[in-house]
Amino acid sequence: MSFKNTYIQRVYDDLVIRNAHEPEFHQAVHEVLESLEPVCNADPRYEQEGVLERLVEPERVIYFRVPWVDDKGRVQVNRGFRVQFSSAIGPYKGGLRFHPSVNASVIKFLGFEQIFKNALTGLPIGGGKGGADFNPKGKSDGEVMRFCQSFMTELAKHIGAYTDVPAGDIGVGSREIGFLYGQYKRLTNEFTGAITGKGLRYGGSRARTEATGFGLCYFTEEMLNSKGDSFKDKRVIISGAGNVAIYANQKATELGAKVVAMSDSGGFIYDKDGIDFNIIKEIKEVSRLRISEYLNYRPGAEYHEGCSGIWSVPCDIALPSATQNEISEKSAMSLVKNGCFCVSEGANMPSTPEAIKVYFENNLLYGPAKAANAGGVATSALEMSQNSIRDSWSFEQVDGRLQDIMKNIYRRTAKAAEKYDLHGNLMAGANIAGFEKVADAMLAYGIAY
Ligand code: NDP
Ligand code: 2IT
View (spheres, helix red, strand yellow):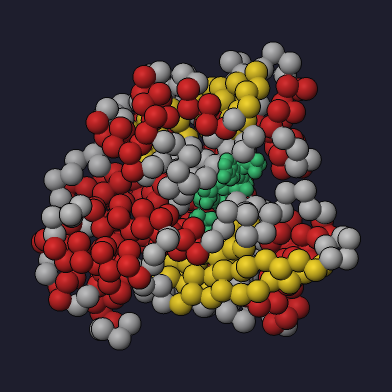
């Protein structure tokens, strides 16, 4: 038995049986259910009305075939997914991931977490996620375009500005969003905000590109401020070198920190003078090369093979911003041993449960993903607002809203933890605050929802 509450134990046991061989999904649900024990103990309605068993079952799961033709004229077939998890407080909202590791378990864990993250933003968005086991790495622009067009030919039947609004995630950036939206528009004959992360020339929002990384730093700064501390003069390590990591580097640097290490799936770089995010942008975003290229720009820097080595670099603050389960128990212990006092998550579920235990045992400041990386989807919701009113806001307007949203998420999360005497446990706070909002809506709808 891992839970004290028998209702929660029953829900979890059923989930494992009904979703066998989906370890990431089990992990994400386990963490949330654990946080919800005091909430369910305090309010019997959640059990009486079966809120948890409804919440862990997606409203709809779509699996589809994605056939396309590569540059050699060969037919390729990938598997596409969209999990429409919860529309309790708004249209399904969440990104699309293109990576060979994508499967039902990964998309369900991401979709499940998205429900609570989106609720925390304070904006009216439900939870969903999608993607494909397609690997954009090494593919030509033409191949990526044909894949995206085929993917959207099916997906378009299931999404819409008031139904389900996808965006980017790993492997889906501005190039892919362009191809996807172009095909969506053509198929539906409508110019509506059915996708976010769009280019500025065709309905995108200013600051969406920067939003997840910037938001991560705004949230983390707020968390540090609560302890009378800040990013100023701190050594920071950021895993990943993609959309989240690049702009987390920019904002952490602007806030006075020095980002000494970053990584990609091949290895990590160390630059004691601070990594210039513009160089990473040039290497990874523009040229789509390996992070080891950094040494051509900064010969004094170091490159080490293997991405997990980054966690042995001494730092004050770690911002994991690559992928799930990238920090093991051993890596967490190495962070602590080398003086790290704060971990704040840009990626989704980057810490294993064992790593999280290490953070708590050593009193680290821990910013959980659902709260810390919510700035991306929050700004997506601002893009939806601009699309609805056919307006376009300035960078300062959007960035100002983002700062307010991240500060509010911190407050909401800390307050929810306080309410259940879990002082400082922002993981529980984020899960509880997100849950209460969604669960209230579900109670209002009655059982058939
Ligand atoms: P990108 O595709 O832009 O970048 C991903 C980065 O992480 C790349 O540097 C990639 O290395 C590395 N990476 C990916 N998978 C692995 C892996 N299995 N092992 C090691 N390294 C890996 O993605 P994003 O920056 O958009 O996303 C990063 C994380 O942030 C994900 O967890 C995502 O879900 C989360 N997130 C993203 C948001 C967004 O708005 N984009 C919002 C909130 C969360 P390489 O270049 O070698 O492939
Ligand atoms: O994990 C996430 O929150 C995202 N990939 C962003 C989703 C969105 O809809 O902007």
